[in-house]
Image (cartoon, rainbow, N blue to C red; front, side, top):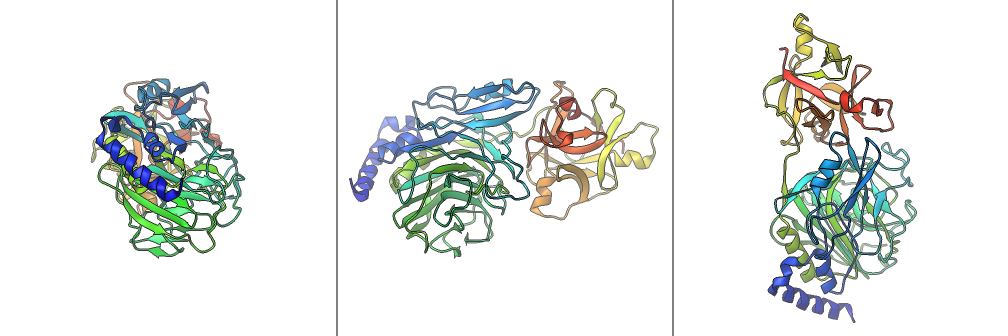
Length: 506
């Protein structure tokens, strides 16, 4: 069947689905199949992407005993069982170790191996995402997305049935349109099987961010673009495409599709409305024919460039070039899922504007509080008889999160305008410079204490959800449970990251 006849057939099927009662039950991959462009990869930690799918969505591993749990939907075609994850991960930390492929092709995503890129975030295999960094609700039911911090990545270099060479394919991803940076490259899609840059046209992946090194769109970004290797393209050439808008949606649908000398970028608000076409036309010079290799990446570039950040909720790759009408039906399905934000915090509540102290709870250290000595954040012994200077240094004003209003920032009482922030995973007291990077480094999300006590909080980084305020040899770090640094040691981790929050000394 010709591609034009396939497109006409897909439009007719999509129209029939919209008119039928069965449309509400159809998942995105059911809709793609109806247009003769079946999913060959389907990944989501939030929901099933087929109406009949009831298998595993993803796997988590907990730090306390290194056991794993597969998370499935609550029912066939339904939302992930977040409660099972919460119970399994209670009083410890969990990582997302596998994102299962729902298509039946076995194209699961696992921890990305080392690649050709050897940037500052590289250290062997990429990091895995924390399991609680991206909570959302779908039709009121809680689920978790994949919060990708710099250095985090997933990959499958031995994928089955994905497009290779100049074969046609389509893809979409639902992302957080407010979580991005300008580093390379927050991608989802088709990449090299060697984890190295093998040349122009060897990739075809969705990119999201505000990089201007190659192509870019209108305004200051971020933009949905395509990573075709050695270039992020917003249109026909690696320059500006004013039809590719800066994105402001909290939940974003991003689409890229390509066939022989034709490709398109489309996108829209994943919570309401329809899709827009940001580019549709011929391939860039040097990118026709394509030389796609068929690996699948998430959160990284084709050569494992892993300095980017973003949040992924769901996405698929198809065989064949989907019609606009089928994509419109998929967008309607995504909107009907009703993605919405939910709380990023738990445990004893904090009050913006209040001065607080943070007391260590580890046995033998309970006379120590988080304080600062110049720019160094540490713990010091503080009591009612301490000097006024020390009391002020151990007091912190709670502020609305500089990068995310759902979390908090901590301003020094004695040095107004200076905040606790992480830098190379040490906690420092620095004056705000007003940059996006500083705001992200200085935003933290309290949760119920990992020590299991109802009176304590553990305070995790918003931008690195696997990392928590931890005292180690009386110095404060943003530490992960069992990471590669000395201060990531598992011994006494849950106690060291649990704090008793009281009224400030000053």
